[in-house]
Amino acid sequence: MELTGIAASPGIAEGSAYIYRNPDLTITEKRVDDIPGEIERLRLSASSAVKELAFLKESVRSRLGDEFAHILRSQQTIAEDDSIIGEIEDRIREENSNAEAALRHIFEAYIVLFAELDDGDYNKSRVADIKDVFNRILRILLGIPDANLSNLPQESILIARELFPSDTAMMDTDKVAGMVTELGGATSHVAILANNLGIPAAVGVKDIMDIVQNRDSLIVDTSDSEKALIYVNPGVKVRSKLEKRKTAIEKNDARIREDQDKPVITRDGLAITLSANVGSTAELVPARDAGAGSVGLYRSEFLFMNSASLPSEEEQYLAYRKAAEYFVEGFVIIRTLDIGGDKQLPALPLPAEDNPFLGNRALRLTLSRPNLFITQIRAILRAGAHGTVKIMFPMVSGIPELEAALDIMNEACTQLEKEGIPYDQNMETGIMVEIPSAVWVADALARRVSFFSIGTNDLTQYLLAADRLNSDVSDYYRTFDPSVFRAVKEVVQAAESHERWVGVCGELGGNPLAIPLLVGLGVTELSMSPRALPEASWLIRKTTLKEAQALADRILDLDKDNEIRAVLHEHYNSKE
Ligand code: PEP
Ligand code: MG
Image 1 (cartoon, rainbow, N blue to C red):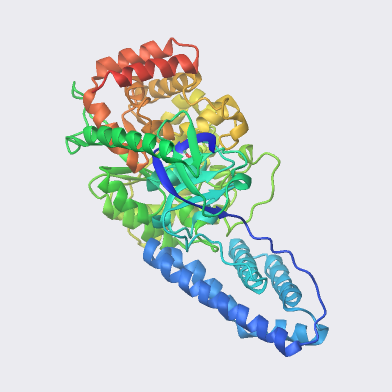
Image 2 (image 1 turned 180 degrees about the horizontal axis):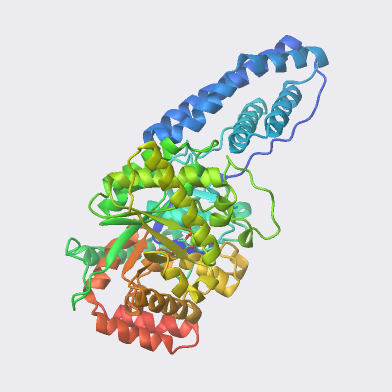
């Protein structure tokens, strides 16, 4: 059987299906007579929870570093707390309650208690910790195995309805051969993660959770960027067809990697900066190995997402400093917290919004929480003392919020100065251009910052009013729409008139079809998932600026995305 979807990360993966479902933790209240037996059940479940947390803590520490392990440490402390377990035991005894119901009763009381202590974000993160521990003990009591993706079989093809950062935080990435989700678009979290890890992924594959069984043999073919094909229990014919395709891809890869250490300059001498998009300390090494000289987008929110409590200034500083030191010969652009929309923080539960993508997200959210914001800015400024760090604000719609952010940054500098803590006094500031209004006030923005980085993932979604995550409107989310390139041109012109540089850090920046066009439009920095770097470098070395500019002129005259794609394909195929 063959299923189709959207190619989100390229390649061909083979493995066996691992179906990931969020467990059903429904509780039935029951009267029990065997009180000692029920207490024993509770104790065993709590101690298994402690063991699971200890194991996870160690595996997270070794994979991602100490800064990520602290959330599990604090959860372990809750699960080990004799006084909480004692209260649940009392409830079992007094009410003849089953362990599940008693556990819920006591934990709910703690959740209410902490939620009511209106002590800012710290208690919100304690609430998230308590809820997580409650779910873990409950899951064990209900006899449901742990499905946190930290313990996957070898060569798994992970199948899920949707995958959020909180699901993948613990994922044992070495065991994942491919990923397939029913929902999502080409720039959703799972797509970005899969690209960064070099794992083939498909999204928008309808009904796969119902069609595929655990351990079915699967091949995910996303080698064609237009469409993903998923073969369920494929036969010999399909396998041999795909073997041939794999060989052709390997041949192309070898061609691209020839001379890959040469400087990234066009044939007529224009240097283009190629940098990597990263989301964690663990991604720094593969980024540099793939040829990145700098980090063009450090998505700092992942440091927060992997954690049930908010990382402190010190923890953030250490993580950013590691990046600055690792890329000491280049630069690291750290983007301040970009949450809301599709990205939620366990440590900072946000009120539900009817329109989260148009709501209190990214810079708007951090401006509404100055303590959270200033803590992060201080950490970034301090990391700047150990390398070249630049700070970048996400989701800027206009001048007022940019000025508000710059005021907070000044305040952070004043504080560090007074405290005598070393920091970068001349840190460059930049913004993401991803809200269409920013395109039209780019001139005024350019007067206030040093650089722009165009976030084409969101810019496309907002220009075309097509949700980047919704596979039902993926045909309207037109990556190659003329409006996107006209916007890029507008931004570059505004930036150039103030001698500012422009980069692209959305997925388009690493798209081989788009690269010569972006260079022709005047973009001088491209930041992408590390796996896209070798081909980007090869393409630039094969192009002249003159030719790229002619291509841009030709594209800007076209009206439709399919015409643009056709011209770009033709141009790409002319390179050998
Ligand atoms: C973008 O919007 O293009 C971008 C790079 O940011 P993110 O994908 O993290 O929203
Ligand atoms: Mg964005």
